[in-house]
Length: 274
Ligand code: UDP
Ligand code: MN
Image 1 (tube, rainbow, N blue to C red):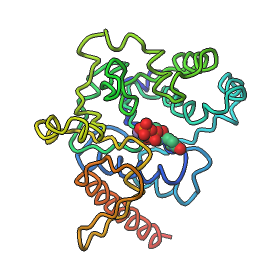
Image 2 (cartoon, rainbow, N blue to C red; image 1 turned 60 degrees about the horizontal axis):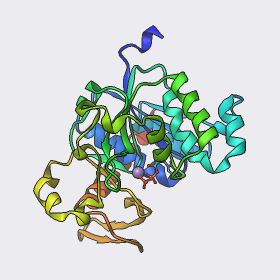
Image 3 (cartoon, protein in one colour; image 1 turned 45 degrees about the vertical axis):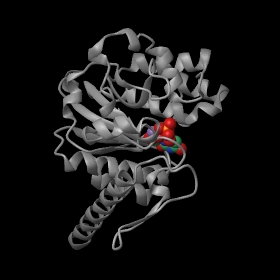
Image 4 (cartoon, helix red, strand yellow; image 1 turned 90 degrees about the vertical axis):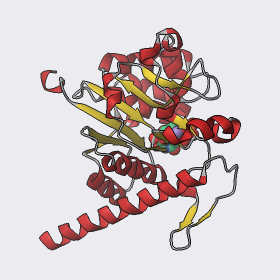
């Protein structure tokens, strides 16, 4: 499609209200650092209308995807493998063919600086996974939307499944040349700093952590599970392994407050207009 030639976007995904909070912070973090790209969120019908409206104030586009309703191959495959639901939903990002190039970012990521330079990279560019560095972590990747790729991913999911049960296993199987494809496709770990690095290799974090460009809050406990008392600067950590740096969680909460303010302002404006 011609019109898609120069269009580029950051893309994220939220299948429920709690991940939407992460998506809001991600959008706010990209805006705050002056991105010139569009910011798109894929949502599923599980997200309440109210939350969808809030997302609309922060994102350029909120795109509703519903694998279960579609009548294509994805639908058929999913019926056989219901456990791949969320995984399939992430692959929907390849259907945004009105864009020439996109950067997918998990809803539990947060940019600390402008990262528009990622659009100079080609599919599939990603950073190594901290747990198995010959694989890429699928929380941040540069890709080229293509219906063909989408269908190939779905077909692979159907025939082989994902060896880790999630999108990362399947994407690494599909893009299996990544680790040997040279430096241009290997993003610096700074673009997807999974916070476990802060305790598995704390001297490296002490040395390089200040250059982090994107924080990725991997694992079961996400920033929105904690609470932050802004006035007293006290973070109340949720139960579970506390693997993320406090300083980043607090930053996440500040951005969350900013995005909430922005939504409130816009809602008030709408109220005056109507
Ligand atoms: N996701 C979602 N709903 C879910 C689980 C995941 O929308 O119930 C999306 C969201 O964008 C999330 C991504 O899929 O960031 C990958 O999941 P997660 O970040 O929880 O995995 P981790 O990075 O901790 O391995
Ligand atoms: Mn993640």
